[in-house]
Amino acid sequence: QVQMVESGGGLVQAGGSLTLSCSASGDNFSKWRIGWFRQVPGKEREFVAAISWSGGTTNYADSVKGRFAVSRDNAKRTAFLQMNDLKPEDTAVYYCGTRLSTGLSASALDYGFWGQGTQVTVSS
View 1 (spheres, rainbow, N blue to C red):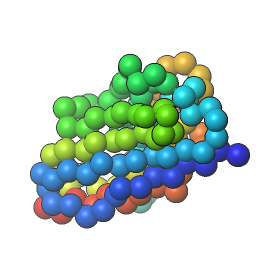
View 2 (cartoon, helix red, strand yellow; view 1 turned 90 degrees about the vertical axis):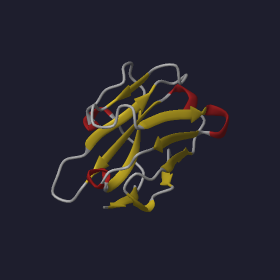
View 3 (cartoon, rainbow, N blue to C red; view 1 turned 60 degrees about the vertical axis):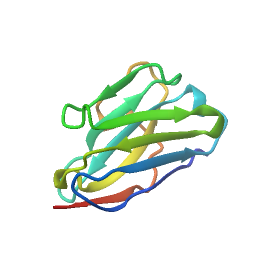
């Protein structure tokens, strides 16, 4: 059974930074693409970033390009989302999900094994 655990969220002022972590159980972490998504109440889960199994390819939503960076450490079974220059509109619960198929999809439907999420709140 795969388990994903997100951590690192918190309250930060606009312009600040946070680094989220996504830790996974199981032996196949290095084979998975990892996607980061976020969700606010009443809205669908929104794509933020994704990273290939090797870390050599990444994909970002236009809204976070240049501010967020996704990375991974396969030896530690952990993926990271470095978030800089945070804005109030980045406030959401952030989730990581896994994907075995090729491609860094921006659709939440293409990912599975979601964690419980971590809350990020950016004050103005």
